[in-house]
Amino acid sequence: MESNEKQNGPMDDPKIVIIGAGIAGIAAGNKLSKEGFADFKIFEASDRIGGRIWSVVTDVYTDEEGNKAEMGANWIHGVENNPIYEIANENHLLQMRHKDKSLRSKDVFIGESGDVVGDRLVKEVDLIYGLLLTQCENFFANNMQATDDDSVGQFLQRKFAEKVDRYANGERHVRDLIFGHRKLLECCISGCDTLDEVALQDFGSYENLPGIHYTIPPGFDTILDILRKDIPKDNIVFNSPVRCINWDLGPESKYPVCVELETGEKHYANHVIVTVSLGVLKAACDRMFTPSLPTQKVQAINGLGYGIVDKVFLEFEEPIVGPDIFRLNILWDEDEPHEADLRHCWYRKIYSFEVVHERILVGWLSGKEALFMESLTEEQIGEDCVEVLKKMLKKDIPPPVRVIRTRWGTNPLTRGSYSFIKVGSSQEDVTELSKPLKSKGQPKPSVLFGGEATHPRFYSTTHGALLTGYREANRIVKMYTTAECRQPDTDEDSDDNEDNGLKMSF
Image (cartoon, rainbow, N blue to C red; front, side, top):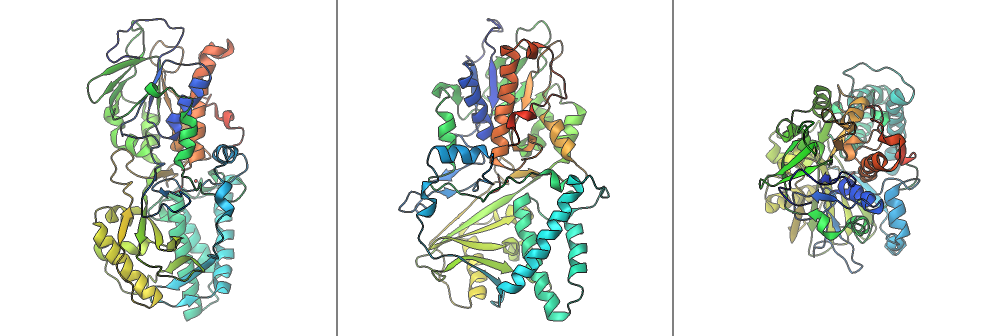
């Protein structure tokens, strides 16, 4: 497909443009290639594939076995019917998961002043918290009605207070601290600032796949490399941000869609698969599409939640914790006076420091604190984190020799991390976002939508994103390979059955 090409040529082999080379876009290209569709281009705004999957080789984290630092997606969420797990397992990417003979297994829960909380109390609160999360999920699963403005955070707070009401003073307080930690963890899992943003009614629409969660030691990007092998090299075009998608060129036009790049190049196509993040759609959908998107789709884009989750990697000259410590869980005390200025409290959103290497700790945080952290220097981040660790561990700790942090919120190509169903929105908004659009007079959809935010059950996950790429490619394949599917599509046909029941949590 040449730039500024004339609107002529045979219609037997459709011209297809895929916007975005994240896992959804790469999966779509992989499927099209395998089905014999050669006339397509993937336009990627950055200089790499992967999007919010970003595995980097650095001397901060890469170890003797080749493990990489995951700036983005980190986990394979569940095993059963998970296409990411299946690809990783078939290609022996998980064979190193049993090689670690380390004795690191201890999850320590420590107050900000250094007081350790025992396992018995943690397990007690975990049991209550797990039961309450199940109750949240049951609103959707059992079609129970919550009020429109009720949130997961409000429900958990009410019900937990009832569960621990019989405790007084210190006994109640320590349980509240553990509960607060679990809520911060859930904020990172859901991708929100606070759980008060997450809709109670549809919290259970997210489907957890059975099985444990895995990491991929050689790097999550190896999944992309495998999928990419079936895509001709010249079909992926880097450093090519899209300015506008004109999706209604009129019945006299040979091609119903024109994709214009920021360089001014125009690429005509029969179909466009849009896989940019929900954050980019929120920021640019009003100027990215001509004509404007339908009102219902814009409302879905604006209504769904899309949050920021970041990581902070701290490398020290020598180990700062014992060889048995796997994770330092921080129990922040909200009753303790602290400054409201984010410069002096952003780190209170970090729920734990995980020991990923004997000299390297990784902290996770979400929301407005994560966004503020992105504005700080690495030196400031290191100083703040070391002060927290000194108080927790009750010992002097030298400054880290290196700090690496992610910046997903201020990255203009992502504008955040992953989606969630926000108060006021519902799973129906995810379905609305996934619906393809037809140009006037065209029997087949012209603009199709993929990406994690378009999967009604696996939003926020890499496997959800991958499946939507397959889904939209299959939608096009069916248009040209079966007589039945040459008939005009209906808006209700989402092709969601492609996953056969098959979190991008960082």
